[in-house]
Amino acid sequence: MSQAKTLPYRLASRQSRVESTVVRVGSHAIGDGEPTVIAGPCSVESREQILESAVQVQQAGAHMLRGGAFKPRSSPYAFQGLGETGLRYLAEAREQTGLPVVTEVMDIEHLPMVAHYVDVLQIGARNMQNYPLLKAVGQTTKPVILKRGLSATIEEWLLAAEYILSAGNPNVILCERGIRTFETATRNTLDLNAVPVVKHLSHLPILVDPSHGTGVARYVPAMSLAGLAAGADGLLLEVHPNPEKALSDGAQSLTPEEFRLLMRRVQTLMQAESAAVFAPTPMALRG
Image (cartoon, rainbow, N blue to C red; front, side, top):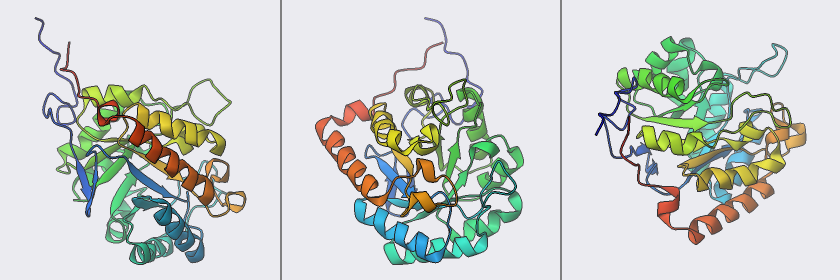
């Protein structure tokens, strides 16, 4: 029998850790066999908007609240977020609902401030290979959601995770959010192949973000269910009280009612299928 090839992402690989990693955020566990749902608006736009969003997603069954305080935008003229004010609103939403909060950190300069306010740090697709930032979040104890880059291979993505792990932070959660292809019918191409591939190669939990993966709200429920069926450990979803008036990503945001309907479908799906379908036992690595 040929010996398995040593993978370059040593700490992220199942060669170094066979059992799946479970990342804990407060009392909640990501990767324990039950799907985690993180939901909320793309951007924190106002105190009222984020508090309303938090209550709506909490009542529908979400486990965590997402919302951007610093927003990397393709256009310098687009809404860039409320900064520290937005972080304070997120912290207030956590106090009112009990939901842990997730937000993106864009640079090392803002890392201490962001880490002070939130429970989970997110590294966005554009920063997946920002190695100084990866090393810096690796020196914190905060859980980190690492999104796949727009054109990154799975190996490049796992090597990015390796930077965080090698800096000392074991609490890494991967997130497939779609890659750029020739297709123009959707914002990105949601690569659900990545879910079983990552489950085979790595012990790290993986989420699917069908909001960015499709860019179209009507496609989000179907791809959410498909992501869970593929074995994802959870979903990262954009939900806005009034998507038509959203300052960013309104076209891909679910309304609170659409989110409630999706959560019911998720519960039905999980009840109908055995846990083995969604958390497959990884096969031994082969060369």
